[in-house]
Amino acid sequence: MSQKIRVLIAEDHTIVRQGIARLLKDQEGILVIGEASNGKIAVEKAVELEPDVVIMDIAMPLLNGVEATKRIKKALPKTKVIILSMYSNEHYIHELLETGVSGYLLKDCSGRDILNAIEAAIKGETYLSPGVSKVVVENYLSTNQKMSRDERFKTLSDREREVFQLIAEGYSTKQIADMLCVSTSTVKTHRAKIMEKLNLDTHAKLIRYAIQLGLVERDNV
Image (cartoon, rainbow, N blue to C red; front, top):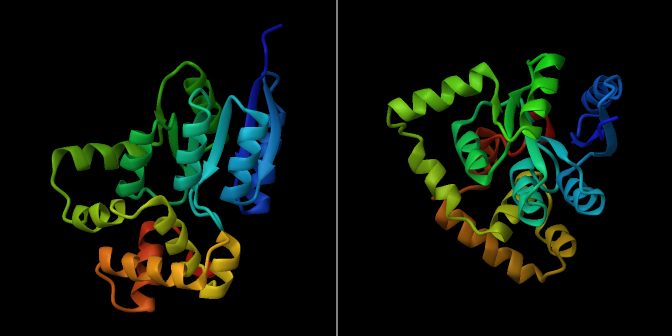
């Protein structure tokens, strides 16, 4: 009997996470070895359990799926990551493909799409939802004006991206300092650099920017 594919599911919406787990547990060749409700837990469990495949949502609290994916791929190069997202945001699609994800599915996909993506990942292939494939092709064929905004976001360091998300999620300077084990002045410095690099001058614009990128959801801010 062939070895089962070991899968970790990272999704902050419990009903969605449980639905995916139920789908996969019904498959003879797949073993769900863990679940995570935010990006930080996803990274910790991935390092601990070393799954064959991680199914990763993008918009998750504390650490979004993009940064979590980067950390997992850095620590576990052989682990395959399949993105499951509500957003066909071209910035994320290209950044994640460059990171080495094995699939990018939109949440309106079918259960069969998820199974096909896992099968493709194990074979070393890349599986994209039709809507994602369209974005990739359109971006290849034309110059997109939003790239200037996305290129600015790429200039943020890993720590600045982490602070950026926590600010967008509504945490205070002191709360962020406590969470990251740094001083409040360090958080203020990061915030100033973030605002400068992204060419933002108000907190409201920062929140709107985070929503446009899909880092946080409207109902979470």
